Amino acid sequence: MPAEKPVLYHRYMDNPQTRQEVGRKLKEARTNKKMTQAEVAKKADLNTNYYACIERGEVNPSMEKLESIIKVLGVKSAKILPF
Image 1 (cartoon, rainbow, N blue to C red):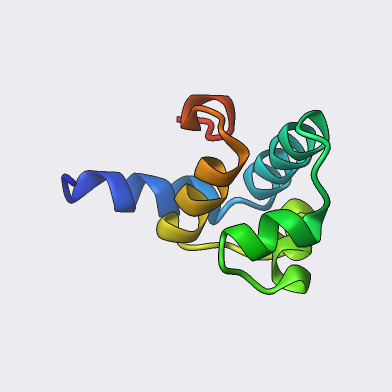
Image 2 (cartoon, rainbow, N blue to C red; image 1 turned 135 degrees about the vertical axis):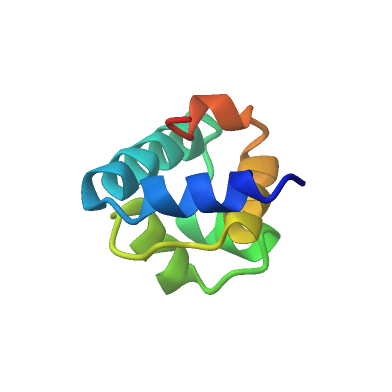
């Protein structure tokens, strides 16, 4: 992975509005799949409370954790990430 990608990711995800938008899109994808937060968290190997914080835009997850969630939800990253 090129060095610019993580820098770009963190630049966007440091913005609270971006985190909230990403969280909203994750929640939308999850509800479309008729999954609970606990189901997504378990399959992504995350704590359920931490996953809930991601959906609310309260935390800045690592790129690796976000990639894991996106894989669990079976969506393309372009549907979730603003870049």
